[in-house]
Amino acid sequence: MRILIRVVVGVVALAVIFVAVTFGASEFGGEIVTLETSDAEGGTAETRLWVIDHGGAVWLRAGVPTSGWLIRIEQNDAVRVTRANQARRYRAVPVYDPAVRDAVHRGMLRKYGWAEQLIATVRDGSQSVPVRLDPENAS
Image (cartoon, rainbow, N blue to C red; front, top):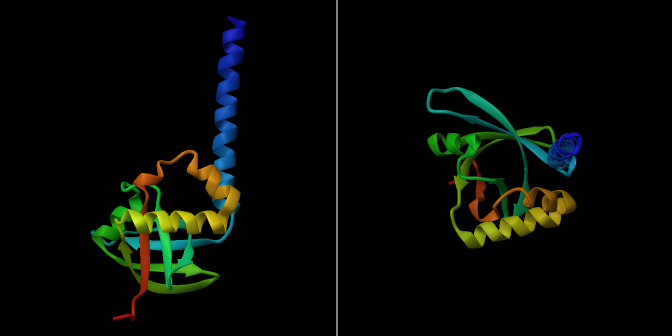
């Protein structure tokens, strides 16, 4: 019985360590922006995300299509992003094209390196949704 308890405690400890390292990688692995979204009722939420510049645009990525911030964008695409202490308004455009998704994954890997590799071990990249940020004043 003692051996079983030690095994269970060891597995739980490893899981906790993995979650802590994954969180640390996402928070301290590179540039993070703050995305402010609004829901259909007018409530707002802030989400900290990685960002890349690719193909002349700014990109975010939802790990899964059910991410709360992505759902709010689908309800209201007007967002505010704070990057390098500067806030700017955008229209957020989810892009459901696998080629774009793969390009954004590659961009995230180039920019965030080991942290992206670690995060990629716990998500299904085929479910990710890249989101292009178009400046609000663009036509």
